[in-house]
Image (cartoon, rainbow, N blue to C red; front, side, top):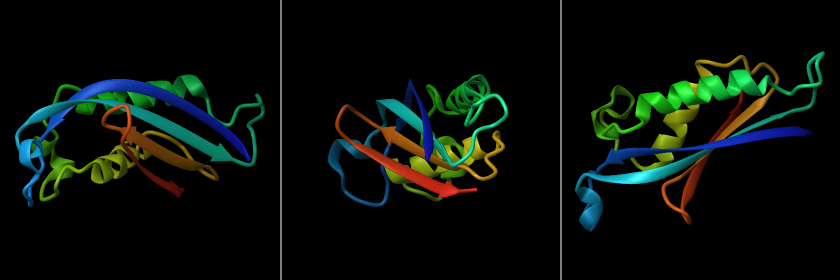
Length: 124
Protein backbone atom coordinates (compact mmCIF):
# COMPACT_ATOMS: atom_id res chain seq x y z
CA UNK A 1 0.00 0.00 0.00
CA UNK A 2 1.35 3.41 -0.96
CA UNK A 3 0.78 6.35 1.37
CA UNK A 4 1.24 10.07 0.87
CA UNK A 5 0.50 12.70 3.51
CA UNK A 6 0.66 16.47 3.68
CA UNK A 7 -0.01 18.74 6.64
CA UNK A 8 -0.91 22.39 6.95
CA UNK A 9 -1.89 24.71 9.81
CA UNK A 10 -4.66 27.27 10.18
CA UNK A 11 -6.66 29.07 12.84
CA UNK A 12 -10.43 28.91 13.18
CA UNK A 13 -12.93 29.74 15.90
CA UNK A 14 -15.89 27.90 17.42
CA UNK A 15 -17.91 27.38 20.56
CA UNK A 16 -19.40 24.12 21.76
CA UNK A 17 -23.15 23.75 22.23
CA UNK A 18 -25.51 21.23 23.81
CA UNK A 19 -23.63 20.67 27.06
CA UNK A 20 -21.80 22.36 29.89
CA UNK A 21 -18.14 22.44 28.83
CA UNK A 22 -17.11 25.55 30.72
CA UNK A 23 -14.90 27.87 28.69
CA UNK A 24 -15.41 25.72 25.59
CA UNK A 25 -18.99 27.06 25.47
CA UNK A 26 -17.54 30.52 24.80
CA UNK A 27 -16.25 31.49 21.37
CA UNK A 28 -12.52 30.76 21.17
CA UNK A 29 -9.88 29.93 18.59
CA UNK A 30 -7.80 26.84 17.90
CA UNK A 31 -4.57 26.55 16.00
CA UNK A 32 -5.60 23.54 13.92
CA UNK A 33 -3.22 21.23 12.10
CA UNK A 34 -4.69 19.10 9.35
CA UNK A 35 -3.05 16.00 7.92
CA UNK A 36 -4.38 14.57 4.69
CA UNK A 37 -3.37 10.95 4.09
CA UNK A 38 -3.91 9.30 0.71
CA UNK A 39 -3.58 5.51 0.44
CA UNK A 40 -3.74 3.33 -2.64
CA UNK A 41 -2.37 0.20 -4.25
CA UNK A 42 -1.42 1.69 -7.60
CA UNK A 43 0.53 4.65 -8.93
CA UNK A 44 -0.21 6.63 -12.05
CA UNK A 45 1.97 6.60 -15.17
CA UNK A 46 4.27 9.19 -13.57
CA UNK A 47 4.81 7.11 -10.44
CA UNK A 48 2.49 9.22 -8.30
CA UNK A 49 -0.25 8.11 -5.97
CA UNK A 50 -1.78 11.57 -6.50
CA UNK A 51 -0.42 14.80 -7.91
CA UNK A 52 0.87 16.48 -4.74
CA UNK A 53 0.57 19.96 -6.28
CA UNK A 54 -3.12 19.40 -7.06
CA UNK A 55 -3.63 17.94 -3.59
CA UNK A 56 -2.00 20.96 -1.97
CA UNK A 57 -4.06 23.40 -4.06
CA UNK A 58 -7.26 21.60 -3.08
CA UNK A 59 -6.24 21.44 0.56
CA UNK A 60 -5.43 25.16 0.69
CA UNK A 61 -8.76 25.99 -0.95
CA UNK A 62 -10.62 23.99 1.72
CA UNK A 63 -8.58 25.58 4.50
CA UNK A 64 -9.43 29.02 3.12
CA UNK A 65 -13.12 28.23 3.67
CA UNK A 66 -12.49 27.66 7.41
CA UNK A 67 -9.51 29.92 8.18
CA UNK A 68 -10.33 32.75 10.63
CA UNK A 69 -14.04 31.83 10.53
CA UNK A 70 -16.44 30.87 13.32
CA UNK A 71 -17.32 27.26 12.47
CA UNK A 72 -20.75 27.55 14.11
CA UNK A 73 -21.73 30.13 11.48
CA UNK A 74 -20.85 27.96 8.48
CA UNK A 75 -23.51 25.98 6.61
CA UNK A 76 -21.96 22.50 7.08
CA UNK A 77 -22.12 22.95 10.87
CA UNK A 78 -25.77 24.04 11.05
CA UNK A 79 -27.53 22.02 13.72
CA UNK A 80 -24.28 20.39 14.86
CA UNK A 81 -22.02 20.82 17.81
CA UNK A 82 -18.77 21.84 16.05
CA UNK A 83 -16.80 19.08 17.70
CA UNK A 84 -13.41 18.00 16.44
CA UNK A 85 -15.00 14.78 15.16
CA UNK A 86 -17.63 16.62 13.12
CA UNK A 87 -14.98 19.00 11.82
CA UNK A 88 -12.76 16.12 10.62
CA UNK A 89 -15.68 14.63 8.66
CA UNK A 90 -16.80 17.97 7.21
CA UNK A 91 -13.23 18.82 6.25
CA UNK A 92 -12.84 15.48 4.48
CA UNK A 93 -16.13 15.87 2.62
CA UNK A 94 -15.09 19.36 1.48
CA UNK A 95 -11.77 18.01 0.21
CA UNK A 96 -13.40 15.03 -1.50
CA UNK A 97 -15.54 17.44 -3.54
CA UNK A 98 -12.32 18.76 -5.09
CA UNK A 99 -10.37 15.54 -5.78
CA UNK A 100 -10.65 12.48 -7.99
CA UNK A 101 -9.99 9.74 -5.47
CA UNK A 102 -11.09 6.71 -7.50
CA UNK A 103 -9.50 3.62 -5.98
CA UNK A 104 -7.82 5.51 -3.14
CA UNK A 105 -8.55 6.02 0.53
CA UNK A 106 -8.50 9.52 2.00
CA UNK A 107 -8.13 10.17 5.72
CA UNK A 108 -8.25 13.58 7.35
CA UNK A 109 -6.65 13.88 10.77
CA UNK A 110 -7.34 17.16 12.51
CA UNK A 111 -5.54 18.39 15.63
CA UNK A 112 -7.01 21.22 17.72
CA UNK A 113 -3.84 21.50 19.80
CA UNK A 114 -0.52 19.68 20.18
CA UNK A 115 -2.11 16.66 21.88
CA UNK A 116 -5.67 16.08 20.70
CA UNK A 117 -6.93 14.97 17.30
CA UNK A 118 -9.80 13.27 15.53
CA UNK A 119 -9.91 11.67 12.09
CA UNK A 120 -12.38 10.61 9.45
CA UNK A 121 -11.62 8.29 6.55
CA UNK A 122 -13.18 6.27 3.81
CA UNK A 123 -12.76 4.68 0.41
CA UNK A 124 -14.26 6.61 -2.47
